[in-house]
Image 1 (cartoon, each protein chain N blue to C red):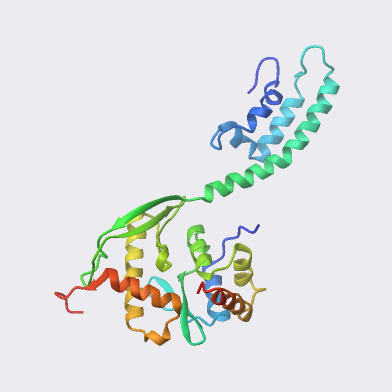
Image 2 (image 1 turned 90 degrees about the vertical axis):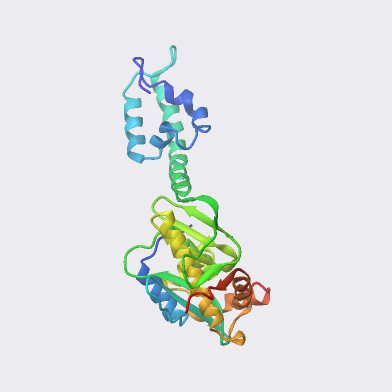
Length: 97
Length: 184
């Protein structure tokens, strides 16, 4: 069981690059993950650098609908955008998104 | 734990060891490898065998016992760390968004999670959360989030919204109204 806390910038970079999310905001950064041209998931990430706090990371992970291992994979590299979209499509088929 | 007759306490306290509360100092001491190895060394240097038993037999038995404790001690350290990560959870009612522009038609119940060094407030149904080093900061952060989502969704075309954002929009319109007395 991985219990890693990521760097704030790493989370921002992974989500914006892999999921093509355009973040904006003054304090925290907010951006939509689009599927089929529709706003589907609203991500919020902290600004700046340094390690993220445990509660904040947990909330981002909950937002992503990924379990701890898959979230680690999404942020730390092995999971690419298309693989994430497949997981989200599964949830859509189940009527959960 | 030390007595004038040596360390006879630990063996007899093993069953008790498993029923200690998580905050018990004895249990906490077992979660540190250095503490444990010191403890083992001190224990082995003393004449701890019960009357009538050979120290060598006792030593071997106790060594086996301690070897079997080591993995438990590691697992315990993991569990203590996991428990420390669990937040204190409470429900809070908010009655105002802290904005001149918007009013709440009815109070909203939000959840607060207090971690060691941060507070998270959230409205789970809308997947909104705020964070801060204190309750007031985290609550205000969540209120700003609510307003931001409300404005985002009301400025979005309906066909642009997925299933959940549509539902969030409906919920927010039920509980938020614009303050007509303030020019937006």
